Image (tube, rainbow, N blue to C red; front, side):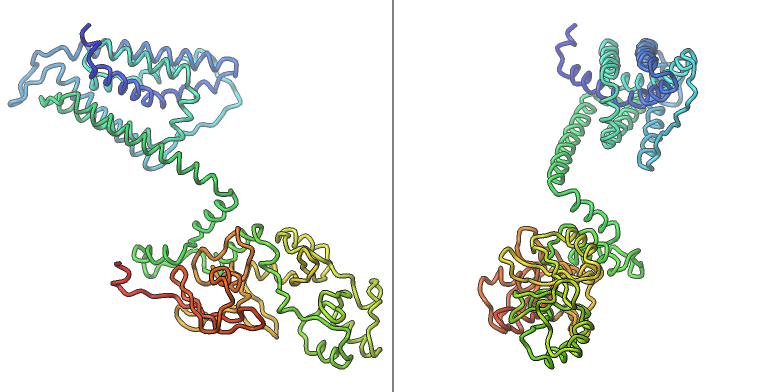
Length: 524
């Protein structure tokens, strides 16, 4: 009984129990498949009988094989090699383990899965138990040979088999879920089989490999796998903190081939030069616009106040008529003296007709019967989905966006929603907010949307949910912390921003240049 106090024995027992459990998972899965053919009230009984038969069969095979490996008398001579019965058993068992592990690894790496279809006709209990017995005989052989290759004492082998089967009986469902959720554990154990099979082949050919080497290698591998699982768990925990919408959007964009410019340049050397991407840049930008639409505020897509066209009733009728005739807009806000003193919303053609018939527009006609309509107001804190719902109920009328003080901040039309998805659609009196000027150089309007600018520049970091701005001007003012002068420059994340024009206390034009580093700077 001195072997009971040997640490190597306990290390071998623990390792063998783990291997027996993992090797028995396939047996457990197939027993569950066969048990599913029975009525629900007989399935647990069949599963228990199946695992009990597996334990008895393994104990019997262990006794036979352990006796066979004691046969050390040489049977014949083949040159310098004189194999005994023990050598042949070990050699054949090692070859079997190598073959078994190789086939299983191939199936795992190729993604082959065992599936079964559930039949509505239940099988008889005896037939299912008979199939389980045959199945146990097939699946027990590798477990028995593994036990013989791992330890030398029959008692340790039997204890490992009894413990592993007991664990599988008590926790069959959690074990199955764990192994299915951690495929690397199965691959690791199959690699152990390769190592044990190689050691058995070496033993059969007369080369003794100390068991301590196997225990050390297996223990080190298990420690590394445990650290890997711990790191994977922490990664998933940290990833779960990111909103599901953001994770889904990022996954979809990566599947479509969208990536940051830095990542694209890093991967460019690994790609074929003539390889065409499945999705174009415009398609990826449109999908990105759709996926991020719900997270955006109405301020980020509206036409800002500085770019709004509106009719001032205090102007001369001729001036109003000339303004309406030159305007490309079909709907315009109408106010008295200033935009915040709103009278209503009117169609341009109705205003022109009214001006032709009258010298003035009656400002009290905003009752829905005259040319003026009551304005539809939306707070600037609303989201885009709320704005879309408001536009659906507006019946073609534009929506005015106001702040908490009732001051008009901008207006919103269905075209603004479309531009947030597909890019700009400038009117006759507008120009593109982002105009390419050359390789790595753009002239950008200060009111340009940061979401669209990110897509054009192929970068990240411009948009933040914690910031209260949505334009390039707001982004630069937040970093400069003062009103800049024309010609002032700032470099952020590999981009140089040069202020070209400042009009009416706002940044009007900005030149953006990509900073190109030479080889020495890149190395540094």
